[in-house]
Amino acid sequence: MKVGFIGFGNMAQALAAGLAASGALQPGQIGACARDRAKLHRNTEPHGFLAFDDAAGVAGFADVVVVAVKPYQVEAVLAPVKGMLAGKVVVSVAAGMTFDRYEEILAPGTHHLSTIPNTPVAVCEGIVVCERRHSLSEAEWQSVQALLSHVGLVVTVDTAQLGIAGTVCGCGPAFVAMFIEALADAAVKHGIVRADAYRMASQMVVGTGKLQLATGQHPAVMKDAVCSPGGTTIVGVGELERKRFRGAVIDAIDAIQDKK
Image (cartoon, rainbow, N blue to C red):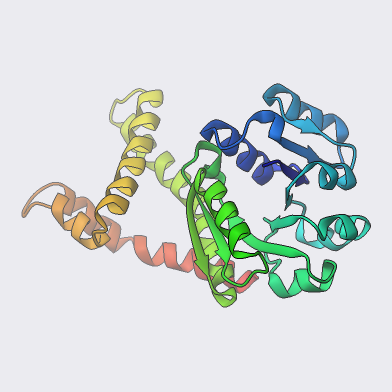
């Protein structure tokens, strides 16, 4: 299978890196085009990915074409290659571009799927939220799902929930990074070397997430397991509750949804 990216920004680069790192694809099976040719070569050549002059080059090369330009650019970028895409599997990573919108843009009968990945796909620990409604054949869907599974958890949602799922999974890494930074700052304040503080905080987040996925435990149960009666952790939990830690997170998600 060959995968081509129309647009090669941060998300496309993260997906390409994950697919190569996981061994799902060899570097020569990955190609891309982008408006800034010099930047494209800087981002492809060191990894062994192929660089193409335009979307037609990508469409001619790839079995799976990933649309990775800004949402407002999608229609104009795909217009010249609509005919070529009719025989391909088209996977979108453009936020807000749903099945119905692509039905308007692409040639009739084109097989397409809308997704929202997050940046940890670069290290094969991401999430790829897929719109449940798509036009892939069963065999194509199984093939694409298997491919994406190499870079993270694949979740399907109804169209109405695609936006909120994308917000939680796509914006969430920024919130987690802020939490890691805050924990590390606190550790440094109390004498831990900065590099060690970052490593410890990051591994704590990774380990906690993996523990929840492995056990399926409710987060409250996991929290309770660490909070001994009269112990230290419950003191910190109480302080976070007084500062509206959980409420602040929910407010942040609400603010993003209100902006859309």
